[in-house]
View 1 (tube, rainbow, N blue to C red):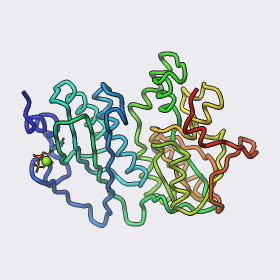
View 2 (spheres, rainbow, N blue to C red):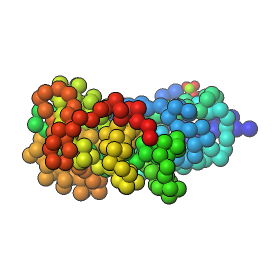
View 3 (spheres, rainbow, N blue to C red):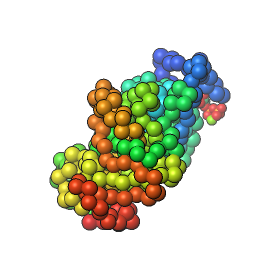
View 4 (cartoon, rainbow, N blue to C red):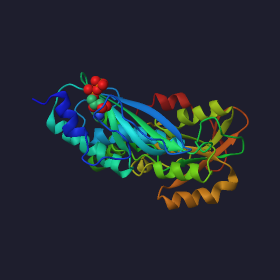
Length: 321
Ligand code: ADP
Ligand code: MG
């Protein structure tokens, strides 16, 4: 039988110490801040039955629970430094812990982000990670900084995670390989850390957010906090490769109001266009211009020809097919 402390030592203490002055094992970790930098902090919790299905693969869960946190650092333009892990587990299942740690540390190591502490308790499966990152003062990409005339951009593609969910729920019929491909987007999202860093360090973007609850809702946070509105081209929204083969109504609905995308939506002055494309190419993350910020509040839609579209956002939220 694995004790709480054996479990932590065996699965979560790494042989090679990282940047922390003092890592796992004391009452607190000690971390020396980089001189002159601000600390960016964010937490995200994943609850079984709410954020993931019961019985979800442990390795994918390890990846996703850190990925959604790194995505918040990316949206702020902060460089990942360290994280803590609070874990409620129904039992000490070695195979589960091995898989979880594998998925977690593969992503952590890819971003040089060190596990410096946490808490472990028995209970219904619940994973809460707090990430710490660093960003130069004045460089963070905030939600309240969009300005009328800015262009609106989104990274990568949208909607495949939502399409996978629709497939699992039987709302759409997907061939097994399409279901698997879309499922990969849902289970193993890619946090856009390198893009967020370049946008912040080069001073290219004004406002940014990561798309976790769907583009319309998340961009809505930027609009509200910045006191502006936007006009988006419904047909410019980049659909994921699986969603791209679906009918237009579904494409529009799931790109605009999908969820679980973990792409970056950001605004930037038109003069930054070429530099943004250069930054995107430098980090291998495609970006697409999808509209512009207006002084008038609210969100408006056009088609590819600029003709106004009356899209019912509420129908996106309750979309079933
Ligand atoms: P305390 O009783 O002071 O809260 P714990 O006994 O819970 O400390 O934890 C002992 C050490 O192990 C601490 O350094 C804590 O940060 C670390 N720790 C506990 N659970 C985890 C975990 N799931 N991942 C990483 N570190 C952990
Ligand atoms: Mg504790």
